Length: 212
Image (cartoon, rainbow, N blue to C red; front, side):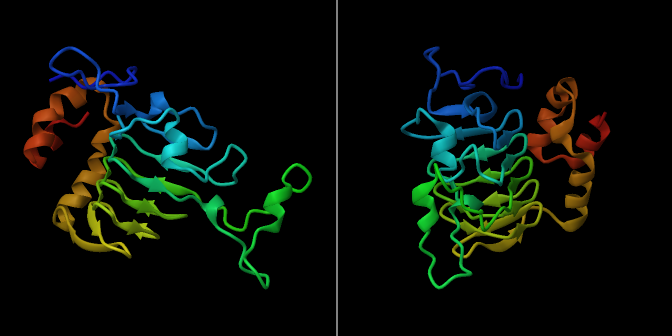
């Protein structure tokens, strides 16, 4: 089967020929100076928003110090939210109340937290997951529905719960190392098309043979 057309905003065509508006290629849907999304990564929502950037990362402003980076071939389910560093309040004083926020035209407050949020490649983030400021999610990871994720998530880990905890890994360590070395998500289109059967069947040996 051909890969989805990355130039399309809505990459899924329903059996009646209409476009499924609830799933979008994020790289086509988002134009935000602080968000970078790789090709083929998509998000889905039962009630598609007008502003996908605002929906996914409601605290991330064009003037924020941090960025949200999402790799290629990621899958983001309904209700996922990225609570980026701009949401954090300063805790060095006697109160956390952000007095300065209410006088932005005259006084831009120093941002107490500037950590980027980084999602690797081929990451599946399940329904309603909450990704906290500065989280870094490794390639191939799965974030379970409703998980609250902070800190580092290793590649190909499966994380569930609150706080998000690694329950297990998708593959043995040796296979994870092979997959990371292959980095199939960066392959040229022709090789990706040839590799689809190996990727879907879990045939790592065949995938290595097809590597460019």
